[in-house]
Picture 1 (cartoon, rainbow, N blue to C red):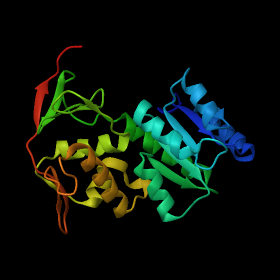
Picture 2: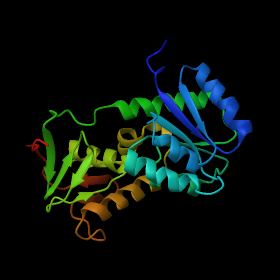
Picture 3: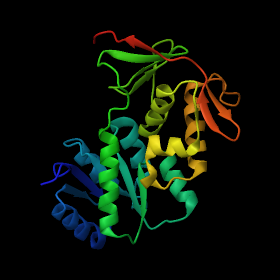
Length: 244
């Protein structure tokens, strides 16, 4: 038995001809697999269980996969891999922009999908910062608790961030005042396996700026370094967390 065998996968797809054989294959690979035929059924299952990863079709009757993905990454912080027949670059970028961890186009090779699942699970299991459990990270009035993945502003109000936005912010906080080019950000935030485009990195930075900058059109915290990438242009301090 390998080290990922306990991982539980929720497979959400309305096509039984794809969903059922894929669930059988993943089970033979050592995953625990549950199935849902719609976003509504997936939400019902999520009330009773929290999978380690969700395989999610975009085009389904009723609520589509994009809407469910937003809920998964923002409210439940569950990694998502999209399974879809829509293979255009713009569609991939939309999925990644809202927080999906990867994107696999139908038809796909099951062994490749398993490799991507394992890669996403490894990234999700990493501790993003080497910090004591009772420390948070402070920058320009913002406070980020890396264990709870909670970002609060100077007034103490919580600002929701997706999993991808969290990992992107972590990358900047780990390397303040250092230029991070797109290739390095891809490795640190999504991993090479995700096959992101440069534009997707730019869009994720723009989304993060809209949440932490006073004026996202004139950013002062996350600055663009032309020809180089991006830089967090402020100091970062580790501060003790108040006990709950």
